[in-house]
Length: 113
Length: 115
Image 1 (spheres, rainbow over the protein chains, first blue to last red):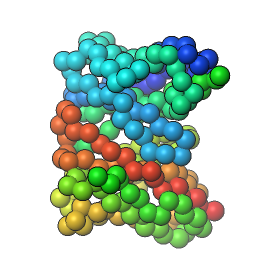
Image 2: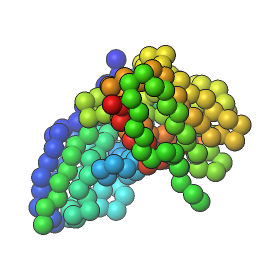
Image 3: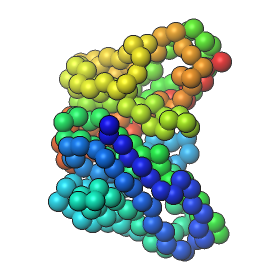
Image 4: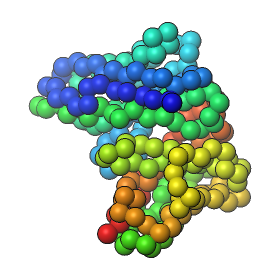
């Protein structure tokens, strides 16, 4: 069964600090891994998409890494801002499943002043 | 370019009723996927439509159905509503189905409350 697990479930950090979110997956055959940011009550917004051959991808202060051998990914947020408070969802797509996505449970991040 | 729009944004129904939700994809996008988001189960895939054909279906009962029109707009219908159907229903549009860099763009969602 395809699964995506994220840790931690929730995280509180001070503004300006860095943090790293983790994602483990068992989706096969693997196509790509995405990180989404979701503000409360809104639809998810894509941060990064990585395929099998990519190890790292950045989007501003967000840097995602992918280790396809161990089936692990991380999202690193640098110099956090209050607006980073949101849920971060790891999403994996299988190559034989069209647009069907498998979602992790998300990490709820709160950035405090 | 306008984003994905969903109507209505909020909906309150009672058990046993049925509901229809609508999604208008980004202009030029031919794929529309639907997702259910609940606090307990997180985000779960319902189904995907591409060129008016259902391409994939998640593990949901037959009470959940959908369709896509020739202009790529999509509707999903839930019949005989249950309390557990209360959720945020999200649709996402993309240019094509599948593919490594096939970005899916999400709408703001429809918040359905079943009383």
